[in-house]
Amino acid sequence: MTLPGLIRRSGIAAAVLLSFLATGCGPAKPPVKAAGSGPVTAITITGDDRMRFAPTTFTVARGTEITVTFDNIGSVPKEAMGHNLVILKPGTNANGFAASGMAHAARSYIAPELEDRVVAFTPVLGPKEKYKLVFTAPDEPGDYPFVCSFPGHTPAGMVGTMKVQ
Image 1 (cartoon, helix red, strand yellow):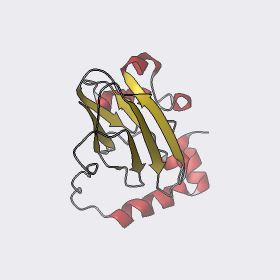
Image 2: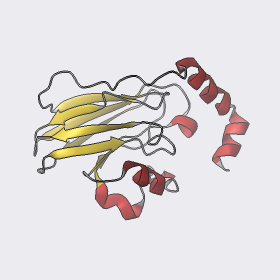
Image 3: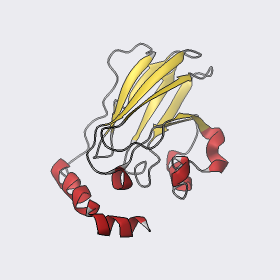
Image 4: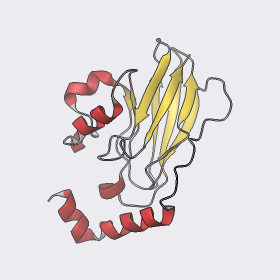
């Protein structure tokens, strides 16, 4: 069954529409930054039904073990509003990466030909699901974008930056 057919049959479209109407259509809120300006070794990042991460920026020290707890705090079913967190190498075109993954649902919306651009990632989570991602921060300092690669979420603004110092 196609996603549009699933949405029509299950009534998910109404839930998604209500979610967007409830959040309003005003100007975007400024990005939320992680508390403090120093490097972290553990952080919780949320994803919501408005297709936003919080915080959108965090800093890590190069070569350290990092624990990111990703928490989908939304309520819309996974089939219509699943979220993941994919940390990419610097210079990766986030929108291009996400567009290439649209046909790869079974691979957390990560295209096989772009796997080499991924530093770390979570699976796609449904509402109220959490995932603990443990990885070693890259040795190369820089800005590492992170995205939700679920179709449409990156271009809608579900993006952030992991700064490696």
